[in-house]
Amino acid sequence: MRKLTVTTLVVFITVGITCAQSKTVADFHKKYKDDRDATLVQLNGGLFKLLASIASYDVDDEDAQVIARISDNIRSMDILSVPLFDSGLTPAEFNDMRDRLKDEKYEELMEIREGRDKVSFLAQGGSNEVRNMVVLIREEENAVVMNVNGTLDMKDLAYLAKHGKKFH
Image 1: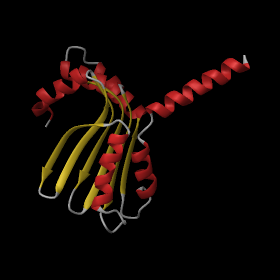
Image 2: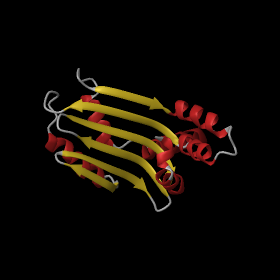
Image 3: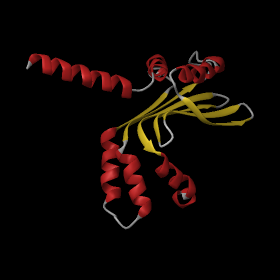
Image 4: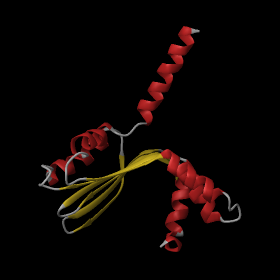
């Protein structure tokens, strides 16, 4: 019995580690989350489960069903905004995060650049799903890291992209 308990515990810890946020993102959070000028928003899975439950009541509304499926599969979301320079964070250090995420098997899905402002979307996953998406936003005076832990189905994301104007 003890051997089974230890084995089960090891499996849960291993799964937890592999599904946890990136080490690069965790290090960034640890270093800057307590900066006096930083803004941190943390949303846990319970909030997304509640949203999924509310959205799933309307079984005839395809939009609501897509939102319910997406919400149900998000474990957490963290958004950390840090002022550049005032916090000690440099643009070069922030840009290096993207390379470190790629070393952690994150694939860059898209990059948007306007002047010095840049947004990079990175995620793990396969052809049918996106796991653990990280959005890096660098503006002239701020750097933002948005980390979404969960698994999102590509069909649901494509639906949102196609029907996105309805949600504005």
